[in-house]
Figure 1 (cartoon, protein in one colour):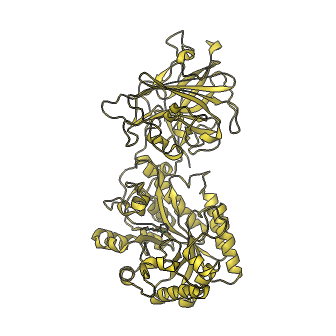
Figure 2 (cartoon, protein in one colour; figure 1 turned 30 degrees about the vertical axis):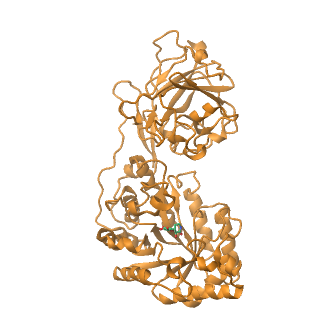
Figure 3 (cartoon, protein in one colour; figure 1 turned 135 degrees about the vertical axis):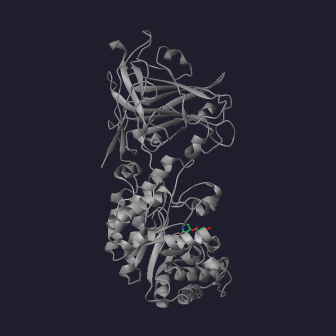
Length: 604
Ligand code: XIL
């Protein structure tokens, strides 16, 4: 169901009405509703987490399955050859049994956390004996108590082409995977044996590679009973049209299911760039919800496991140290349930025939199904010399055509083209002295863009241009030339074009950042000025992904941002032109753009 919100272009009294999701609560726990849906709902836990009473209490109350986050890995259990230490794993096992939770054993054989001694000088026969001994001892120790084992974790290369390098593979040979499953089966014939991996949730080269490998192993009679889809995903990965669209998830789960395998979501978390905003947490809830929905709908999926309980203890905070404040899980650091938690609870409640927890409009918001419609007010021109009507603040920019521009860093040819200075955004520090004024025009081959940036502290070339350009000085232009101005996720024909201040060092190829920006050949010049820098860019009207034909009053989706850094610690200024984009979401949702209206200079 689609819900529409109307943004009216009356300069006084905008009628935007942004939906706020109120405080939520439920009479049920996640685990109760999961059980009603015949589903395990699990969480990874580390022994030390149990020292925190709140953590321990919540884990047993909300989840009916537990995955040892590290305790079952080989480097933890058998750090010294032949000396097994089950102390910590036993503690988790006891906790699980006290709380009537199933244990998802993770993991016997992995290229990481492989004890260093495995790299000793062993013959293949000795290697096989080491593999057998490890698996027989570990699986044997918990025989009858662990219903599911991840026997092999992450055995396939990221591009899907064959086996990844691993100490186990070197020790045993390419049949280490088949042997590992056989030994595990021998150790506990009742346990369900899983192959687990990341990046294989939807259709794609890597999941194809895993599918082929498992098909062959099954044909050889290797006892494999399940596939674990880790689901460490990035925000909006499950949005319609994206890599993990519901179609892609369904098709992938179906093909593994049809091999006779159970499917489980084994390590879900949802990361994102930047700081958690309300909008990010809503999109994150949407990702959790759609992943759970794919699981419930598939008919093969028996567990939904998240990689940790509370945001502050997520591995993403310490793993490679890049995102120390990320909030990727279902509970915040105060152990309060997040929107993502309620999004799951709501789905499970509805499926169990219980009362919904979110109303339909709140749900539509989480799923990105609320579309914003912009009404364009009548054009007025206050200055007769101006080549196009006045812009309507954050709603409409009138771009005159034909007005040809030369990319030379000189703004004289922009004379009488309307100029707009950004005056609002999501981060504007006190005493800010960074500002952006933009203009746009077209001739019959290009759309031209101008950004005059006032900025006393130019910061550029510090962050990696491909991934982290938005942390330093960079104006961004957003264009939607698809004709569908209400779409809520990116497709061909929509582009975020960031023209980095880093171009000041005049590269031969302009450095352009942004989603889909590589699909259009943008040309640009950026020069330092007395009080900042100037950007002139040309965007071709005819490309592989769009044909833009400026006609009088024809419309594009359009937005302008400015990222500014005043020191080396990253962005501290964010200006946003579109009044719809209150949460800095244009990079993921083109429905947050305002409008560019072409204006034929000969029409008056
Ligand atoms: C991670 C743990 O969360 C960290 O504590 C540890 O330092 C490294 O391993 N895929 C997997 C998990 O299969 O075992 C990993 O767990 C996360 C990625």
